Length: 402
Image (cartoon, rainbow, N blue to C red; front, side, top):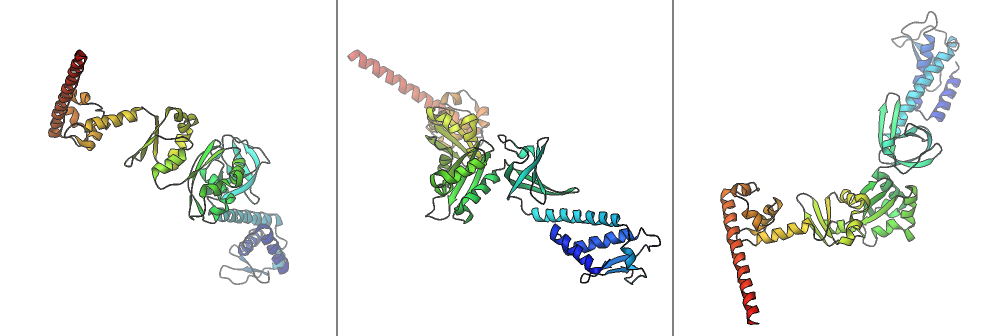
């Protein structure tokens, strides 16, 4: 085989396949060797070497010495065998290249066309390779069909025996974040930062944004002129509702923004358990909780705090009132009142109905403390009873005088 022809073949494959030149040389060498060994009288330990500059083919022994083989005869070897070996090597090289190209692209957006849909799996054509959109990563409100062009978020790239698997998603929160980065220049430039995203794909997303520059309004930048930017993303997501929330370091302000437009009456913060007890007026309860609890659920995901929303006059208020009442018992104090109320002692009568062993079940209360609490509660209760009796007598006397 002429050296110039070999180089021409290598050049063509390099252009068409985008595979490294050295890999192609090795593939051709192995192909020629495999086919040549099938010829009668071929030496078992011979090797094939192609000059990288001239394309000339050399036949070598195990020690690197030239073998007395007519290289011209190698041109008449089993062409089909050589072709099969070359194609196998090229496919292996292509798979390696695809994996190398995509393994560091997890978290990026790609655009592809649905080639086929089979048993819930959507296969996307990316050009040189395919991506898989499994059912678990699909939006529940979208319909996929061959020929559909769409954007997807790369969630995983796996190297498996049959070739690299690129797993993409249309339901991942990262998809929304990336779409905002594409649509809002202030985000890509660093003036606005996406701090958190909570999503229920197909229905609603909350995205928290903050400004890194005083002159830039983060929410306004994401909404765009007359809502143009966010509308574009909503169209891409087939009508999914998007709430753009202003990020705040203060959890009360942040939660208030996230639950807007619902008006909140009070927010009680439990730092230790990362819990927010939120009280709203009766007419604001359904708005704050949202359809099927979606607004409250997404707010919890967005903030990372547990959210409990109740209307005015709920158990939260009763607990607050109980703590205040217990704290008024001489010697109890606010901290002890909190512990008692959290343990279920919501009234003075409740304490008086208990015994020392019951009170000792409360964390931080020993036998001596329990006895003091019972004694103080009884004395306080008796004093309150005396005051009520005096008040009734005074009312009766006042009535008689009149």
